[in-house]
Length: 71
Image 1 (cartoon, rainbow, N blue to C red):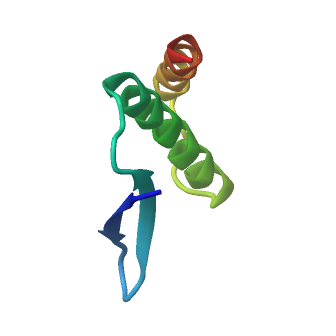
Image 2 (tube, one colour):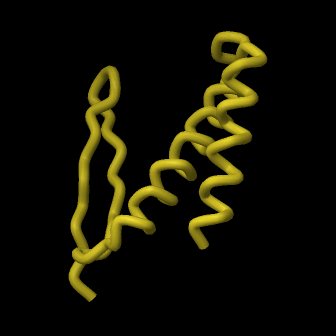
Image 3 (cartoon, rainbow, N blue to C red):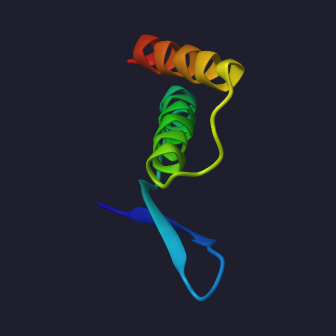
C-alpha cells in the first residue's frame, strides 16, 4: 500500500506525523477532519490545557455526529 505522510512541526524539536493512504475520498477526509478535531480537543483536556468553554464542547459533539454519519 502506498502511503502519504504529512509532518507537522511542534514547539521545540518535535514533530507529529500523520500517515494516510495515497487515495482518500472526500467523505473520508471530512470524517478524518472531525476525528482529528475531537482527538486533539481530548488531548488538550487531558494535558490540563485551557478550560474548554461550553460552546467548544457543543461544537465537538456536532463534529462527532457528523463523523458518525459519514461512515
